[in-house]
Length: 565
Image (cartoon, rainbow, N blue to C red):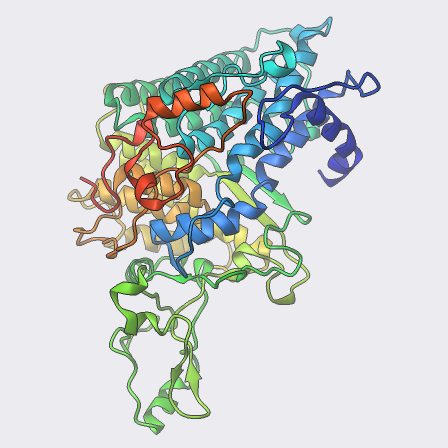
């Protein structure tokens, strides 16, 4: 992958200059072309560039958006509350400047080939890739340009309309279905492939179909609070498909690189603020004896002979810690520091026993799990599994549990898919930890640990709160995908405050439910303003109260955070 990208980096950048957006200020301004620039590029390397950008644009997103905002809102972690800034929403510009342009150009180049019928499958997967990011962009922005977005290059239209979410989802479902039809058609003329230039699937069309179907499940989940019947129809379509959604670990959309380090070569994952485990997630992981506990979080200072030291100085630990807890080395802090300032004071400050003895009590996130170069390490690979088998399986389990299957053969019960999703999540997270050189949850294949976990009373289907159990496993699996975790908590209202199973902690901070789009400038201000007015959005509002009450279309009927049904 490194060789492919390095050899053709200049070519890909030049194509983006031709096809892309002229400036950040004027997203869709006119573009002047240079006749000396390559006009017939190798589409394989255009595809590699867009695939690579899908993962690597997130270098700043990890810190400024996921860790400082979304992750706190979902209560996977506790950390300093930071103000909203213009550093969020990098997903938007990346979509239009780094991902879409080459994909449109690939299709244009293919359409001009004399043997274009031999490139149908190569063209089809470009839609799947752009829809993956498109869903993420509309999640936090609502209406966005899509159907006319590249007409500035190809039709001199520099004022694309902002498509509503309803239009976007209908368009994407059609494009996904069209792509699936082509990719599953074995009677087409002999097809060209991207080969190793497809850095995700190496042109394995079956895996691309699985990804397309899982993206349909993502769309179905987002539509549920607006149109349950449509959610059910999409789910049944996916399960009727001969290939179906992602259902094995080999089909996960995974990016691994020795070069891409979102926290830099120094591994400074504590930039701006360290991040710690929340009390709620630690409580559940310990109660269920979850193998992901040591993968997700670091041990605190209560190790070795600390009990002897406490006894020596006749000191008692704070009341939130049980001295007899066999997993005492894992502790979380309050998700909202204002709810218990005394408890929260231990998040960054040590518990002083004597002048010579002090212990940090609250567990950090496992920093090396996210940042292989943390603390001066020189080895380890960063891995980003953007669409997991576990996510796919647990969505299937959720929809079966809700009765959406009807008479369709789902190739297993909700419990079957639930167990398969959990097993995959544990294995995948352990593999990410191994690649990073981080703490793992087990040695070997993990079958013993996984079997014990599935049999744990806190995890096993019990016939009473099965849907909530599915929800919580979705939540735990999305620990490595904060944007998708945020969407999950926003659409379901889980974890919920009133739960006796896994309760959300009190959170007094107002949570924004969307981001804002910048004024595109005179060239497209009219369409931008019209879209905002139609959505009921205050232009350029960046305050949390406004962003909390002004919801994107598919979020309008969703419960408040922590108030799921």
